[in-house]
Image (tube, rainbow, N blue to C red; front, side):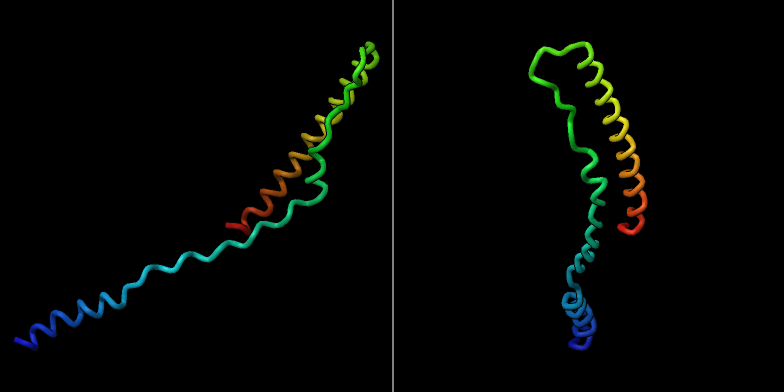
Length: 91
């Protein structure tokens, strides 16, 4: 009878001792720093003078804003390409 009890109880007791909560997964490495040229290229707005604007002022400001918009679009495309390049190493 004692042998039967030990046969049944011993595996149950040892199983309870062996179970531990799983270790947390390792922390992923931090992502690399965003390149400096990408960090600064999204800044800057077209300054609008605090006065009545002439037709020439409006035309100049509009052209300046279009140039900035095109530059920011190119910068955004470079940023997306950089992200696509580093993502495989972060997964």
